[in-house]
Length: 326
Image (tube, one colour):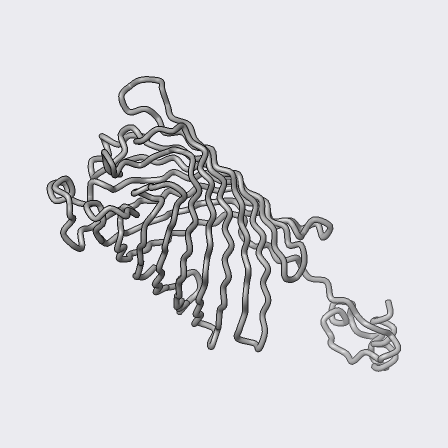
């Protein structure tokens, strides 16, 4: 009604015009009317998503072993298709929450890069290590403030392997992590940003018996991770990052010296589930280029060193570096 009155005051002939014409005629509005709110539809982003990520990199210590006989490098390819549901809550009172459920499936494939030290791997080759992980998950994120993000999650990691013949795949490990994560993010000087991420999880694991018996091995661990990251964005399509990550893991196990059916060695090089405390440190850098929406290419390099409280030759005490692209 205010707009109609204003039109009449500014145009003496307005009274003779049809209503339809008045509704599409643009007229200046005097300042005494105040602010005019424009009503538009709320933006609705897709709730479902589907992504495919592929990493190809050189791993200098494929078995994460300190034993010379089991230490060799190979190319590793990890392909991860993922589908999920991440609804955006429209209610302003709860818009700071971000629920998500999904399923990802990871394919780990190995290609020989240098001669293995042991006769077993010289005969079979790294392709015998191929395995897959089925990973259903659910999480709830909370934007606590402009700089702080919290997330709680639960998931399952179902390991199947090994080798190229899928028909002979066996389920050799199941993990069920329950975790929380907090990320503090701060940007400055327009192109620079820093973040600190802390993550803690409790993982219950089952190693199914491979001999047909019902005597599955059960063990658990607690993981605590702290990551420091510095990123720069010199242009919209380019991002660089350097980071340092530290992990403290406490294993509480069955005391078994070897996982049944494991391909991670035998004898003195067998994987142990005994109680132990591991400390790992990782340093890395990456460059990401995003030439278009929904597509990015990343090159990275990292170095990891692991120490353990007991003489654990596989997965506990090792050094490894990775370099490749994703």
